[in-house]
Image 1: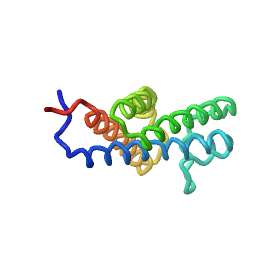
Image 2: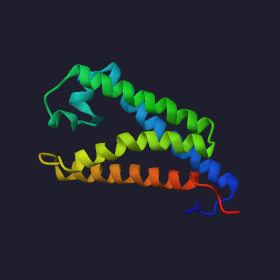
Image 3: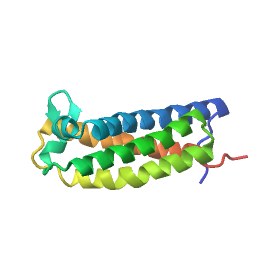
Image 4: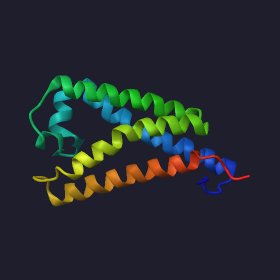
Length: 145
């Protein structure tokens, strides 16, 4: 299987922007969880919604560790955004997928107790995130000659 035929500049822009989007999302989540674990537990994703609190109990150590690991992914994805070499982006996106796929599967099976609108937002967000992973992985495949 080879990557879709994209002009080199378009491909690099896609790799750069996709990696940057994933890096920023992981950086925001990771920074919040690491620096304010109680706030993250009670209020994530914000706007008066508390998704994590619906899956108790609170564990400061666990929330901080998740934050630190999210920041580690953000560093790797950020580097891929700055240096959008297909091999670097592929490594970063695969590392992200190792986290994102099981995370998505877990949440898909644990939606009881969430309001319908929150379920829709969560499922849509996870689906878009995984779609971006697939698009970026396809864009890193060797090009046809």
